[in-house]
Picture (cartoon, rainbow, N blue to C red):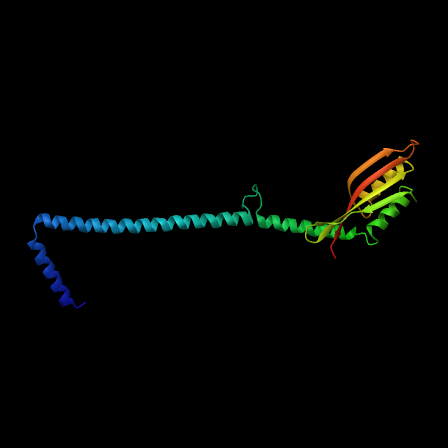
Length: 199
């Protein structure tokens, strides 16, 4: 704006203000103060809201960081990332362990071999398999029921020990032992699970 025009406007405003009474000047000043106060209050409320939103966002990010990475203090539980890495390591170790004990000749053949070599049973045994069940994304459970009559208690113990602690361990889920008619023999029914990788 041209300085001369600005000076002319200010001079006219001064002339008009001098014409007003003291009461009218006070009303104008109060009106200006009220308008300025309203503008300041509106700005303050808006700025305050922004600060509240920013504080909430910072807290949300901090909570997310703590959940993922855990707390820096060693006494607190580790975060999701640390748990994920630990579980992935354990999964790899278990997969390696399963690979080592995988029964290449088949579970049925393994059970028959254990019956012959450990329980000393060559006939009158029954091995039934049931439908497999999913076990995670890459594995399946293959259940088997093994029924036989052991000649001695030691034969039954050796067979069961081979099942759960041998070179190819299986999961023993159920066991039923009954004395045979002669007293010496033992009727054994066992439920076992084989965990194997899906091809």
